[in-house]
Length: 308
Length: 268
Image (tube, rainbow over all chains, first blue to last red; front, side, top):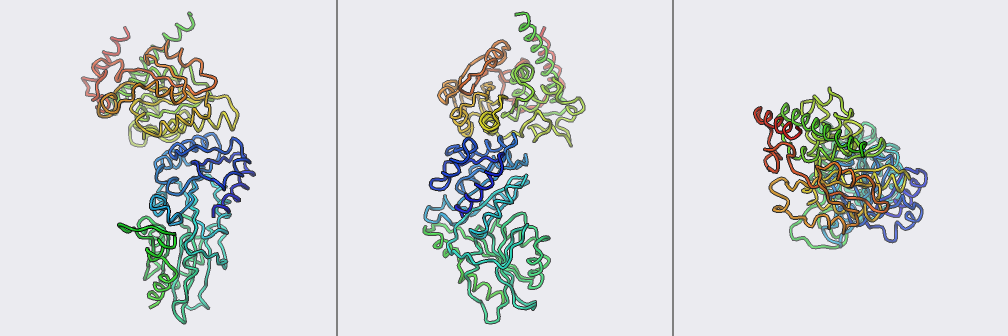
């Protein structure tokens, strides 16, 4: 998603002289073009994420609209208080960008995984979270973030089970995608909802039963706005069963919030999420997803069990 | 000479009035953080009366000194009588640490230490290198605050980018939350640290308006400036000076009366 992000943000930056781009010393082989394009509006602040967020806040106080980029865990946990106090409490248009959501940086080890990033930022006042489902979903998120007057976070990721299946539809505001639709209008079935790039796992699942009736959605934005996502809401009300999949720990994840939002409409709700394991070993993103039981096969099995 | 001595006499009168206002606010509110306010009032008065231009910005990075900032802004007409009367009360915009944009003169909410210098540096960078303005930014830090690593991230940044429009003043009162700065985490040689980070650095008596004025009058044209202002916690109130407990304690009625007498004694 990084390539698509750089292309999209370069367009925004060239259209808006108030935009500035900050990086915490990351971007080799990716941000050089932006650096050349922007002059003093591109700033490598060094390996100093706390300062980067404070500086971004200060710039925003002068009317600028900063993007602040780092690896997802460094852009969030290290400087959480700066994001909360300096940016969110002042409702400043600072766009935090974390590359490597979920297990993207698998073999780099646990310090580089971002499995609590959305949970850490979700409760912050005025904060908007964006977690695109695939590469071709990034530009729309960047476009929307560029226009926001509020703080926002963009979670870029590479899936361990890459699948860029085209969506059947995409909501222009919520960016929610519909990937599969139940045949006909029969009510019995299952609504599968994936947060962000977990959609790519779900899209590789098999048909759980011969007569499976499955809706598949990918959501990409928090706060949830199910008032706008009418198709998704209708699906949940019709099937009354939701399987939610996310590459994030369950606690603090988007699934929790989704469950609360649809509680009155469902009889069964199940979350498949990343799992912390004591003494865990390390490998690729796909390796970690396998360890967490987040694979196309496990999703298929979970769907089959829920369809019962 | 006459002009500047008049200014200094006015500043002394202003600072006394601000100290009295601060004591009244804390007595009414039964609130703490008196000592840290008293140590910074001379710096705040000098900056707000003399140094800060209309478009300059001031960041109170040592947010626990908020009452001193409120009293100073009130004295110079930036906070109304009605507003200052709400200090520390339910429904106020003036809590114990500055709230976001309570009044235009309060640029940012502070209170967690180690944030203000980064914000100030961001403003200074944007103004100098992006907006190409000549306005300036001042940040007031505490010496204990400089335990925070983020202060030094911001210092390195400010120096690297030649933020000559940035003035850092450290209210070095030598006392922090649970001991003296020497005992808790000795940052000496403190001025050398700021010099090593690339700041034009002055070390002065933070209660001497002539020294404060001289150190702040002209900023270094190439580098950010840091003033280590050596102060006394509780300055002006004899029984509070240099006493750790006045970082925290509110005053009894008798202590409030004693404190006012002490201030008047010093000014006579």
